[in-house]
Image 1 (cartoon, rainbow, N blue to C red):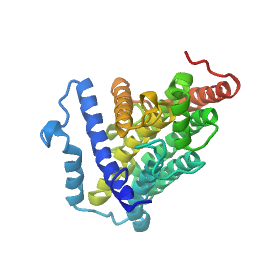
Image 2: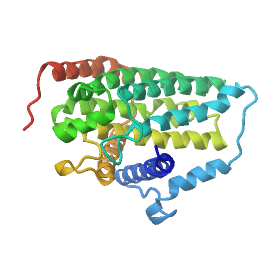
Image 3: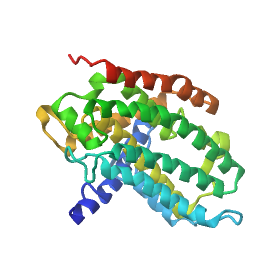
Image 4: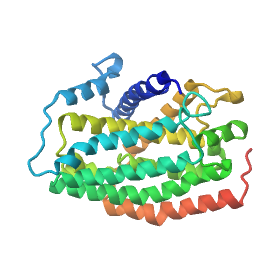
Length: 316
């Protein structure tokens, strides 16, 4: 594996700039829907604003409260960032095969996403702040509730492709058809669950400023807060990339051509979908969010998988 691929394309630097771009796109889209301006002055149309915010947070004072668990409090942001970055190397971006892929990498992505939630809860608990603890409890309750229908729904494309590898799921769509056409219900379920995984409106109750003063990372500042903000950008890229790879064919374009431009176009469309949803709805209470996950999304995800397994889809 060439070293430059890991660092430059489609590696770490590429993903870093892509994360900043996706944050800018999300902020501009939501601002437009809410009749606001959004980022404007830093760079053309404010495109450098996420990078400027990151640099500013890095330069701020890093305060560690006296009562925290110093080891977990310090390691938490680094571990969360690492766990959010790792799955991105398993996403097919420039071709039908990812930079790193193996049979079962979809299960690995699910495992890493779950492990990230546990580390998030431990980081919140290590803050020993009442608002952080409440936010951490809400994070783990909401994320685990939505990860069940998400995991079930994500097995639909795997069943169709007869593989647990994202790269092979993309290759299946290149030779057959886009799975969005065969599994629209699964796409809707995955989109809703990923919105909750991102803790975006209407599922932002774990970090709502008006509820619990910015939630579980209220005690983090300086470099730690910068890493956590960057983590949210990587999570947005991961969520949109999963939608693209599982249902939209990844970088596969018309006539089975492959290009990063196809992937990038589909990624922008998925981010705009997520942005529209978070601008459209009001915040759910935590009990409403959990009820929706257990009572509605989980049964629908099971129905979706049963239909995929037992009833062959007819594509027009």
